[in-house]
Image (cartoon, helix red, strand yellow):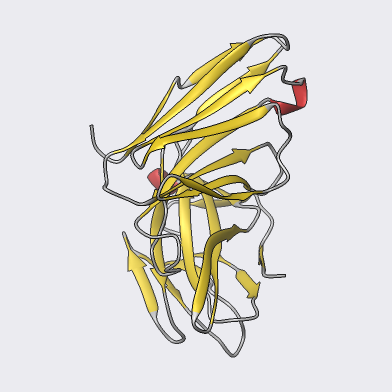
Length: 116
Length: 115
């Protein structure tokens, strides 16, 4: 079945460092891809998404490009801040040609800690 | 209120208690979801409702009983739970379950502790 694999954490960075969180997926159809973020004590919030190959999602300085050839959707940010400390989840929404389940399949999450 | 709200935010219950979790979405969405988030495990989809009809039940034990009286409200009724059911229970909604490009909007969750 469809699945998402993201790098294990935790990831600890200094403020203004470059961030990459790797995410790869397996899917039988043409999924949409998402990054969600969960701040301490809160639910998940959508950070960005891409719905087809070569689309780039971006928000709050974060970017991810839907790479069909490498089945990847890596999250990047050029300069992280302390306020970016959270858990980041990569997810795909499974679908097939002509139809869709629409369920989200999540990776295990990567905890990011940014130190001042 | 905007978005997806959940009450209570925290709940402690004994194994013989009966309690209910409530979720309300103010987004006009047609689909609602219950997830379980346990430490060191991926998010587990529990139930999916589309237009108030349950369309998915992912082998969830019968001690969890969902209810969707209308498209804005979703409940999770709990009875005779086990300590391993302690987790963060997240509710989510989306505009249309069948279109995968629609993202899900999550509530803040209910932190459940079973003693």
